[in-house]
Image (cartoon, rainbow, N blue to C red; front, side, top):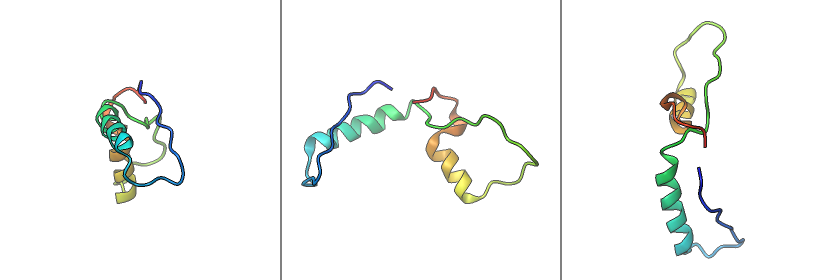
Amino acid sequence: MKMHAYKVEFPGNGNDYEFQQWLTNYESESRNFSVCQLVEQLGPSHSLNDVIRLHDEMTGVNYRQPLA
């Protein structure tokens, strides 16, 4: 993913318009990428618990997109 970095300053004032624009752009661009890829599953297949299911959904494991 090719985006410019955003330098965070601490303490922030909480009303950083530039950061909000960067975050909006980041969230839009990141939909085209995954941050995790399933390499191998070992052992018997069990139904996924809610934590694993949420992890897989949030990281894009099942979407077969390029890694960020």
